[in-house]
Length: 270
Ligand code: PAF
Image (cartoon, rainbow, N blue to C red):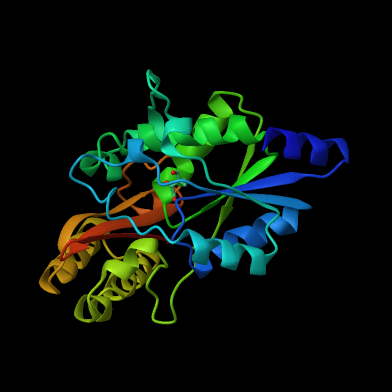
């Protein structure tokens, strides 16, 4: 990959990276298209990264659909797929993690997945330095991840720009995710409720309803619909610090909830 990228750079071509864990859907292809808007060359990495899964999480059953992923990437005109084996990314003796503060320690997903972001940051740091790409595109769907990776790339002078892209949604509003394929038909029918509740909450906050009460009622609606709610919170859109009113700055609403064995996350701007 280094040799390919060096050749492209020598020819004056910009190189974009789209990091993924495979199981590609239209949302990932939108990331590829966004990268193509900024660069002549686009690499897509496919790596189900073990360090970002806790022992009880879905690493083993995470969908692996390499042939289908490649077919989609060929159709989208990606230039290269980087598909390293686990032993190459984490050879015996590997003993390094990126230690994160700031947006990785705000009590959102980090509260429920305490080792997740250090795994994400470690693999992203490796992918960025391995690829030497000029920029990497990340979806806003994983909003806290986007903030963590953006912070890390700047703090560690990784020389890569992080380009965000708005969440791609199904027609009924459900944020696209590789994990949506775990949903039973009944749970799939229920899933868009998360987005609906957040949209209604955003409207209430914009209309200057009392924030604390509006959030609490939205939390109640999600629980009443049968979800197990990890969190639904209003946070500062940049720092992810808690906010108490619209006056505290641009607000982002973030949610994580489980139906059955599937954990869904989503977020929207107010
Ligand atoms: O968002 C994902 O798919 C993963 O967390 C990423 C960024 C590819 C790192 O493994």
